Image (tube, rainbow, N blue to C red; front, side, top):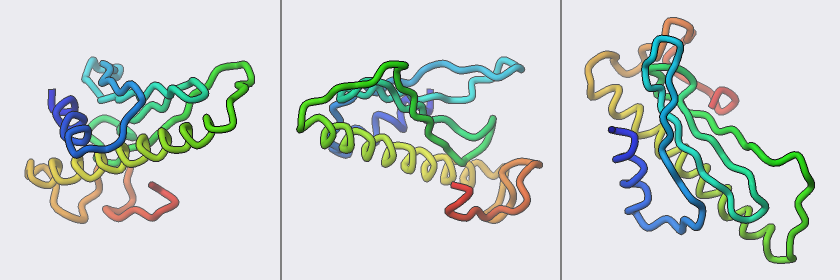
Length: 129
């Protein structure tokens, strides 16, 4: 699976990953694998899910999920949590960039062409990403 290779490439670059990172299977209503990467957070619990905004979309998003209970941490744990979130954000940005490169190289779309019929333009702003 292409997504596993992209995640392994990111890890191979030497990012300081202490979290458990896994590629999970996620299918849309038509049975197509949409791509899902789960980063299990060690400091404070919870996870960050990274996924494309939709099937065949090169833009990625992150969702932070925590438990229902408050988490009590040692004085140093918040710094560890922050470091884990930075790596999750870097991985999400890397997947977005790799997806865009793969999408353009596939020839299915040209630079500037919308990623999907729902997109209003091929460009995004920081607020959209």
